[in-house]
Structure formats: structure tokens, C-alpha cells
Amino acid sequence: MSDVIFTSHATAKGGRDGQVKSDDGLIDLKLVNPAGDSDGKGSNPEQLFAAGYSACYDGALNLMASRQKKEIDSSVTADVSLLKDSADNGFKIGVTLNVEVKGVSQEEAESLAKAAHDFCPYSKATRGNIDVDLKVAAV
Image 1 (tube, rainbow, N blue to C red):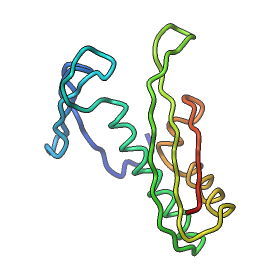
Image 2: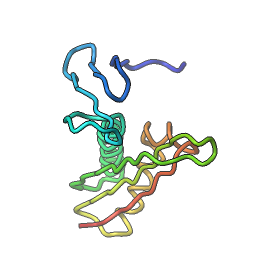
Image 3: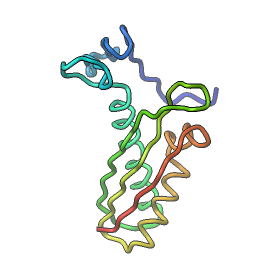
Image 4: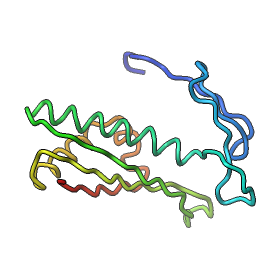
């Protein structure tokens, strides 16, 4: 493994109908399978992945803008879908990153979004493993 900067810890029990908790207690969530029969409220792995990916990607986007001396205001919404996987009759995920960028042209926004996708650790981790669609809008 490369030089570790920091490590986060979370423990899940009970799978999609269980609980997930970070070691510091900041994350302590009931999990509910949205495809199941439960009408309870709770989170799910896709929602947690969407939160992490959108935060990481937005950070990468702002870093790319600052390196290019561009002042932007951005937001990233990650839509993470659970999909059927015909290859093994199992499941897989797909992601759409909805990127809104203020302060630059559409062309500049798309260039920054591509640079962020090349740089973002989540994008690197998923590259070649899941479909990620970038939808970029200069607003």
C-alpha cells in the first residue's frame, strides 16, 4: 500500500437490514433495504456511496479549478443506482454525477469536470469497474 494519509473505520452488522456505525460515532445509521418489504426509514449502501462520491468529486473539482486559477461555485449530486447484473444474475451499481458549476463557461465546466474525474480517488477506484456518467452544466 502507498503512504497512508489517514484511515476511516465503519462497522456494519446485519447487512442491508442492519446498522452501520463509524468508530467515532458520527455515523450511526439504521440500514433499510429499499427493495425489501420494509416501510421503515433508514439509509442504504448506495446512499452512503453517493454521499462519499459526491463529496470527494466536488473536492477534486474545486482543486482542479484552483489549480487553473478559476473561481467557481459548484455542487455535485451523485445518483447511485443498484442494477441487475446479467453477467452473473447478481447486482452491480452505476453512477451519474450531476455537476453544476458557476463562474465558468460550459466548455470550461466540462474541462474541469473531466480533470476532476481523472483526479478524484472515488473515480479512480471505480474506473473500469462501474459505469459513471458525467452530466455537467455551467449555471
